[in-house]
Length: 210
Figure 1 (tube, rainbow, N blue to C red):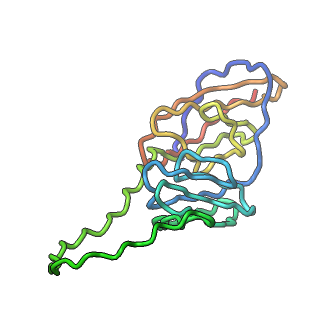
Figure 2 (figure 1 turned 45 degrees about the vertical axis):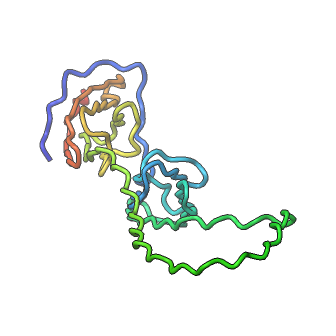
């Protein structure tokens, strides 16, 4: 990995510790109609690509006007990714409710000259809805030496050091490293990376410890 020299460290208000939880699992939904509602365990999500808590049962549901809801239950391991294709069926017409008034009896029709029906042009088959546009994102592989420093990416504390396959919005990304030197003094340093859509950026930072 390329090495970036850290800018002169500044004293921090308090030390932070790196989180060590497992990496989340990730799901990508394909063929989601524009304007559809996506929920994960009953909670709405804003993008067809989202993270899941690993080793847990999750119910994913997609609803769109004029279609029957689509639902899938998944359980993924830490770091696992899966692409699911959403297939929505058009909703059936609602049947008449019980107790509704019956239509009036038909009156005897008068005899009319028979007219041969004209053939009707074939109706075009309905086209599937265009999938929703995917958000522009990139990915980070970031770490430090020593690895005891905590890492904050765009204001969010990462769960581990190093951070692997961390999804960020494309553009400017601010990364803050916080650690305590051998004298017990809290310190921090900040770097800024530029991430293009679909790009993976790798960076390791050497931090002074005395």
